[in-house]
Structures are given as C-alpha cells and as structure tokens.
Image (tube, rainbow, N blue to C red; front, side):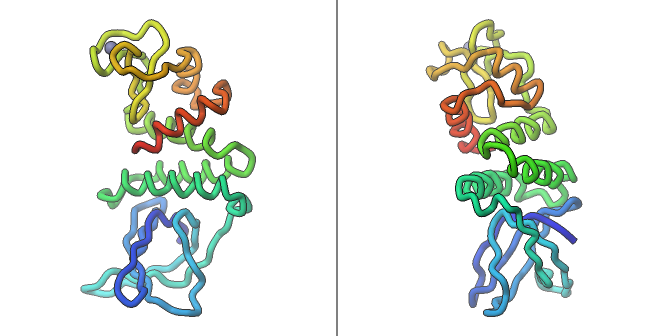
Length: 204
Ligand SMILES: [Zn+2]
C-alpha cells in the first residue's frame, strides 16, 4: 500500500517507530534497524507492506520511496516537511482521519512541482479548514463577535478579528475573502504570503 510518512521517532537500538498516513488510516509501525535499509524521512511517500504480529507493533516492511522531483528543491522540501509535521500533530490521536487528508497531500504534492511552496501549502490549509468546518466565510471577529466591515487581522487557525481587538497588521479584506472562497492565494504578494505562513506555522 502507499502512504506518507508523517512522523519518525527513535526506539531502542536505532529501531524506528514510523507513523504513516494512508488513504484509510494513520498507521503506527515498527521498523527494525538494518544497515542495508534505505533511509526514510518525514514527508516521503512510500510503498510498503505491513507485517502483523500479536502483542507487538506491526512491522514496516518492503519500503520503496516514491520520490518527487521537487524534493531536491530545499525550500520546497523544508516547507513540505514543516506542514507534514504540523499535520501529524493535528492528526496523531486519530486512527481513521478519513481519506481527505491523504488526498490533500496527494494534491499538494502535485501542486508543488509548479507552485511556490508556501502559497500551495496555504491554499491546502484553507482547504483543510473548510473540510473541518473551521473556515470563517462571513468575517466576524472572534473576540467581540461583531461583524468585520473593514480589513481583518488573522490569528492562529486563520481566525478573523478586528485590528482594534487584536493589534496586528490587517490583510486586505477582498484578498482574504477570495482565499477563503476559492482556496486561491494568487492575489497576495510575497510579504503577505510570509505573514500567512507564520500564522499557519503557529499550529493547524
Ligand atoms: Zn472585534
């Protein structure tokens, strides 16, 4: 089967515990150390087998790395890994998160061949917020609960607020509305993308 490596932790004797997101579930698997094994990394998409053993974590076997050409681009690889790490924290308690998250990573990986990594990830994140019912299409302030008629500020989880309620630099309202509606970040300049990225990395 195929999946994305969301997390790797060290166990004893350089063995690894590997969390892999497949279309159906988030697996936690044991990988014995072996000098001849290929290296694996967070964010890799792999083909693999699972060997079940009663009383132990199932074993991760027969790994093939299904590489992406853009992994050689350091900016893209780092942004991808950063998002994967945030996604793991978001999903780690959920064994069956649903196929949405696997499909989201598939689409994002395709977009990364052509698109600026932070833009692509911001758009995917908005998609995720929409899927989870956490996207605020009508801009109302989470602090005072009044409508926001001018430019909003955004905080963690892209929650909107009045600049008077949360003293931060606001975004242009039309750009935020376009982003939330069409999951499209094309109207933001690079500086704004950086601001959105910083909010995203506070935690999804
Ligand atoms: Zn307010």
